[in-house]
Length: 253
Ligand SMILES: [Zn+2]
Image (cartoon, rainbow, N blue to C red; front, side, top):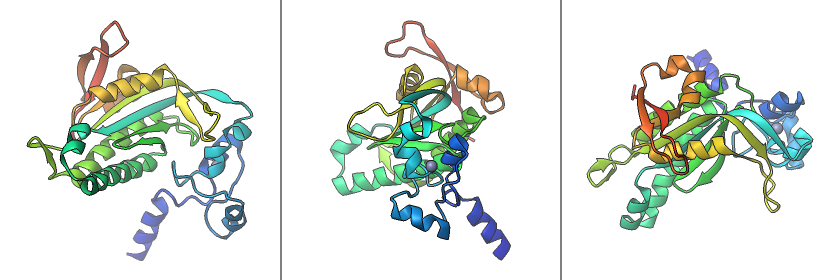
């Protein structure tokens, strides 16, 4: 039993002794766990809130780490939000609402970290995650799909029982893969984000996902064919795009 417990603990995210982002990006061992991390902590270098296996150097010193204002990265972007949240927020009390939001953000983060993604932005009832930066995952499309499935499972368990117009409260997820620009794009904020058409497309897919659905683009599906094999094909008319766009809808498992 003891061995099993230790193994589980080590397999958990947040257990990395050195920052996996700094290692993957610079081959620099920055201690973030254990006694070696103490002097770094004194300098304000700690585990990042975007993912506990990376550090605040990754998060706030993009230019220093990459020696450039921005870089182009092949990545997978995931958006998730609570469907019907605006309606809900007008009908239930603020305390209950904030409980739902914390549950959602917490369950999503656990799922994203378990697949080496980072929670780059949190927007109340929604979030944006990046896979393949700064922790490198060649299989970033599969990692994002794995995270999305876990988000749906975790949130169904956490939000299950809550209803909106007699329908269970649920989460919609959109995923798209391709080249994104990553960098610091604001003069008053020093953390990095991703921008570009791929990011916009992921957000649009998410906006079309019904509660419980995961909509992935044809590009993401092509990078993870084994995971998209049982997916239904749906044609979507997306804002700002003339031609209908093909998306794949992942079924519950
Ligand atoms: Zn780091």
